Image 1 (cartoon, protein in one colour):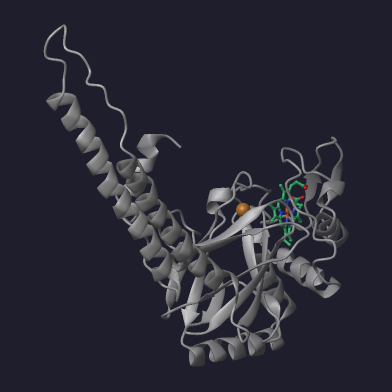
Image 2: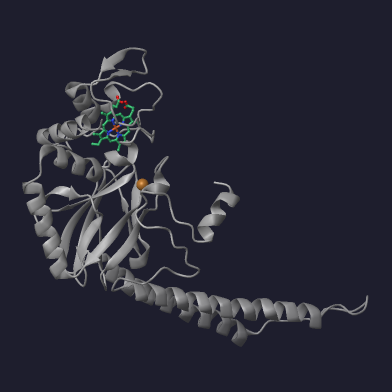
Length: 336
Ligand SMILES: [Cu+2]
């Protein structure tokens, strides 16, 4: 991105369609919206302003000395300075106290942020190129949430995070917290949103082409509204037709991040009007796009690579049930 292309963003331009929340550049810190975010800010502000104070003091004194004690004549000698133990002790000991207090404050807040309250609500977070998906084991929500990370406000929430491909990092600036998403390992993070609202989620570990668009949002609702949302999700999935289910999976499983349904090319080919057509493969052969080809494309995408594309699609083997794959195929069939 050239600097000129970046300027409209600074001026407050909206992000591209599909981004979770329009970028609203802030001059200073983002809003402080979790129960521990103000502690992080306090530690940061203390260190920052003490640094400013000492910067002005030290650079100011240095500038003053260079002028006040400049060499005025050719044969001027430097006075013999021997050192001053009391002074040296003071300028080591006092900053030492500052450092220890920074450590103390940081450590207390860090422990607070690392240890979730025992009654925290559990949500599973899965990172993949280039999408975050969320599942709710305690609420028994079968399908991953396609809306974002919906949580009750004023309730501790514990996230168990993993990745199915490369390193990602789950970052909620307004909550002042982030944690890496590591393949083959679970990491955890917790927060309590102070008030209902929408808060930006970023991936903050460079993970390939569309890393900068790997965004989502936390939607914090009043606990009663959250219970309604859960009930709504449940009844919706109970009465969902296979096509609707496929459509929901298409977003929730991250397909939509790489495949458009309007004919435009993203990371992968658009799936509009594909069903029943023939596909040119990278090895020069061609294949009819039918149920079996789509199924294979989902489970083991690298078995057949579409001409003009790279093998960037993650395999969904072991991640999708048979009925989910069928629902996805039913949905893809409708993309005329
Ligand atoms: Cu990422």
